[in-house]
Length: 341
Image (tube, rainbow, N blue to C red):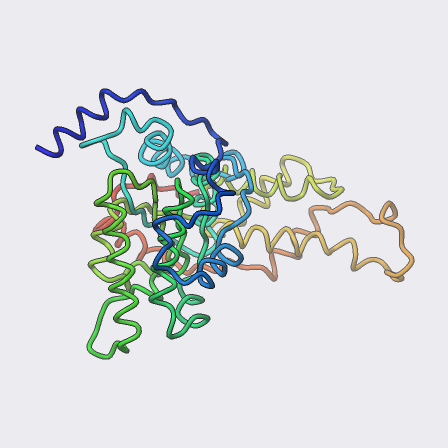
């Protein structure tokens, strides 16, 4: 009966569609001196710490800023962004997920995808490393999690991005310390709270390089689990071109394609390391680095990349890729197209 009433209320409401880049809806109350009800039982010092250390500056990250990952982008737009922009259309069975897991090799753009989601929804972006939470606030981590979600409710729509989520919410065992057990329980309670309150516009995004170590209870709550794979040939080419255009270079399209062919199995961060190494080539030819003018540097050339390829290798092993693909097949929400180039 309650669900029917909620659905009828949704139908009768007049919604103003949110636009990409709109500020969070509660900003008009940001300067109020009144304590928000959600913060009344929260330590003010923790609220201040969260606002200073965890709330990220609202950088505008567009989908075009992310090379490749077209499948992931389309899934995120359909399941997360569209519902946030048009909540009047997405209720009941169409209600968006409250939790998402992004998993895959390191350096493939999981954090950037999280920032793009927040940016495109006009949401407040909370970024926290799970390992930092368990070490930096030892003893207070449980309270910090509670405060984090309380602040997120005040500043909603909010995106809580938890990097290395496996280090905090790994499979429970008898050897878990009491503090660790309480922290896991509190985090799961808070995620459940987001899911039970229809008015809350809080999305929890977990990112991990080790999805197989996640606790089963976490998997159930992060209902959409999306594999973020290594970049395809096209994505690697786009990334190389984007990086080197910031510096003078004389590489031809054929040479760039040759470089990209030699980077099969590289992650986005590997590509960045390769281009950085190649960009140092012209500097190594300078005898007096203190007095050389920037316009005297020779352009980056194909030879610089040939040398860089000798020293910068892929950081992801074939066995790791097999493990990701296997986990995705068993637990992933979508079968990501396979790029063999």
